[in-house]
Amino acid sequence: PANKIPATDTYILGPGDKLDVRVFGSENIRAKEQITRDGTFNLPKIGPIYLSGLTYEEAKRAIDDKVKRQISGAETSMNIVELRSISVFLLGQAYLPGSYTVSALSTVTNALFVAGGVNEQGSLREIQIKRNGKILAKYDFYNFLLKGDIGSDIKLQDGDVIFIPFIQNTVTLGGFFKKPYLYEFIQGESIKDIINMAGGFDRRVSANATIEIDSFNFDDNKRSLKRVPINSLDLQSPLSNGDRININSSSSSISQSMTIS
Image (cartoon, rainbow, N blue to C red; front, side, top):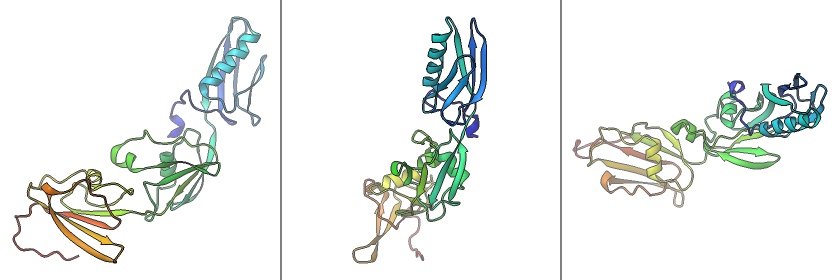
């Protein structure tokens, strides 16, 4: 699918990109060629023009300037007709780690779909993008999965490494949430953040419901359970790894109950 995405003005050209360049005026010239390995594009009667590393917009200006210096009154047009391929590496806790050949317009999200995503031990929220041996950015896949937000997606370049570390922090939501499940959280996120990830409370949750928070204390290796009325819950309270949060529909609907876990 990434092959059908139109190239933006910021797309960086490289060897393998196929261009269609036309010159109109006293001379009519057309060339439909790939950028060569040395980074040049050969335009008949004009000669080679170095385009590798230039953005789409910069390349159009470079061609236009060179043509007008040699042919008075000429006009030019340039289109990309075929995108080059790049190789990227998906390593760490990827479902199918390895080297992948993808379109030059591919993003981290595209590459994750190609590789089947992450395995059960992989983090979705601390995905590292490495370029030239350094961490370029970290990508939070939850923005895409839960919000449909691709604003923080990153365009890949040849040789980029997508490294998926082990998942570090999880919390389990049960009971009357809209999407009760196991969630990954980033250190510093609060109960409010995790409730939003789960889509909020189910409509059956009443105003006098009680939330149970089961936490593990790593200092003394013991679990603690506290029950808090929903109307007095501290939403800004930070989460801890291994927390289990459960909510019933109402605290007064059941007079006697037992929970076995």
